Amino acid sequence: MLRRWVCYFPSDRVAEGLALGRPVRENASMAALDLPTFSKARVLRRASERRAIQRIIDKLKLRPPQIERTVAKLSGGNRQKVLLARGMTRDISVFLFDEPTVGIDVGAKIEVYELMKSLVAEGAAIVLVSSELPEVMNLSNRLYVMHRSQLVAELSGADINETKIFSYFFREKRLKTGPRP
Image 1 (cartoon, rainbow, N blue to C red):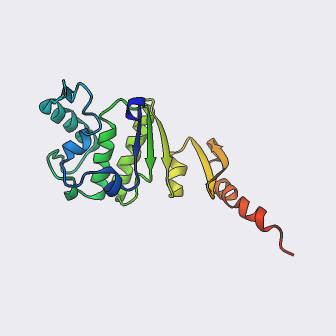
Image 2 (tube, one colour):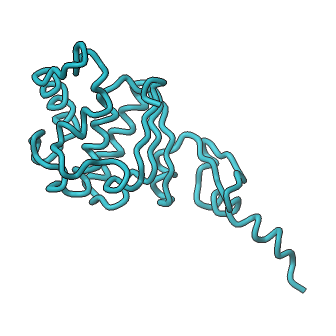
Image 3 (cartoon, helix red, strand yellow):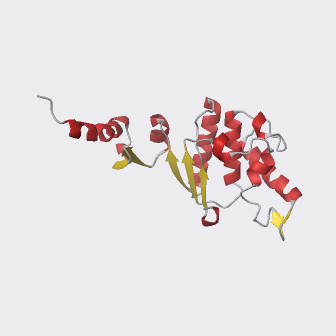
């Protein structure tokens, strides 16, 4: 996926996304070790790796901004930033976010939202999967409503509102049960 400019951010950072016992630097750079910035002739360029990761971590406002700190010692929001940093080590065109703000505080959520908006402004596409309705309504240019694993609607612009979303989501249930006598 990375070689095709696509990056996936799993919903479960701990089980699927991060090596908790390893430092921020290693977690952030592991998807880019094949790039010339990070290695040459299969030899890791540590100084270059450190500089690149520190720049990304500074941009993401990791607290504290220590790239040698073990990821297990970070908060949920900072763990998410480390995962995001991994995607920012490569030239990515499509970002797939699965529940990107689960388990993080309000301040970190805002920072994740700002990052997503900046990625779109730079020309990237974002696919967001979220169970938080306000999140998808405020971040989406186009929204797909799924119900029982089926696509039931595609909404855009002014049609992205709670009333429309719920009407499509619950329509199938009304159609199945039919009118009551």
